[in-house]
Image (cartoon, rainbow, N blue to C red):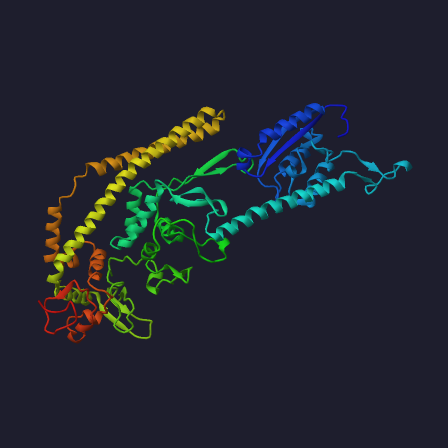
Length: 564
């Protein structure tokens, strides 16, 4: 650099490509130390430091903020000092030239500590005592342009190597993206070197597994499942939003929320939990991962109920998506006024009946189950429909030879539920221990910080974590104080319901649960004509579950229909 006889004011700009690089790699402190040493030896007064933690390969250049500062004459800036051109921009010669010309227009010289940029100007007509814009040039201009293009090419080479390798390893079944909830990343030795795989998270994995288990049971709806998972302490992961101008500053955070119904659907439909990767980099091809999922493929398929189906064909993984039936497209299927509209089918097209109330000329509403707009017409009033349901239920009883099998099945399921409850209690302790560890680590961070803003955010984190611990302790105390259910009482209830099945089917206060219990009677959904007791000729074709028999009726029928 040319000798500077007097002290000149300068702006020093520091840039790293990301917040992670700024904290783990190319430290801004190291660049600042180099710039201060350079300024001291060249008689430069640095009035302001600008620190950027973002990529400079985008159209919007981060250095523009520092350039705008220099353009203000009130700031009295003569020099713009950088470590090197690749720290100034990676947008190539166009971005470099655009930024530098703005500085030159306001009399600010761009200087790098490596000496590639020269402040020397040469006038090719100086010997004649005249000058033009085209006759004055910088001898180092070509070298600067080449360096700017080299910085851009280097960025392209780095990204091509990194992203190309990630795509390749992703297609081989390894994991290269952000860790999904329920998993943690682990590096292992493989034939392809050290690669990343996913392993079950010690706390979160239990939440995901529980979601699939509860949905496979099909005896509670999705909203009830969400409530059960939240009782286990489910919280989404916390992400931090950083200041776009200073990536070291955290301006807010989001996450730490309870599970909602949409989030539940996303988790249940994500094939990564069955050990199958379908991310964009795989060109739409499903890849079996090099690590097992949290649940088996069979459990995944059962929980998704045919909407998403994973199949292995000739050693390849295929995922099939089935369009939802027409009756599920509209919202509000849990209508207590018409609970059987998904349970009983139309006798003409064998598709689910629709329930609605038609307004008459006198303003009175006439509720009915019907099937129309399908090329035919079928309608039965709600009153007659309910009478038909009641009449049919009164003809059904438990087949005597299956009573013991039902009791045995209940006992088996009871044992499974007891084990799950004990496992959930253990999860409470593990989660509380993890949260206490987080508090301790946060306190240790506060001891090393001097920024009041950073300390404030960490203190808020501690308060939130402490509240989570309190909530979990309350849930744990509830679970521990609950008296274990006496199996003798349970068996008495079972015997009562076996002898009085019409209570569940006709007298339960929730019409939706009544309809769900009614659907259990059948292996396949019946049509209205099939359950109409007056239609004796069709009794043989009703696909009644083999656990039940008709205790009234004059005709002999298929298995499960013989009179007592």
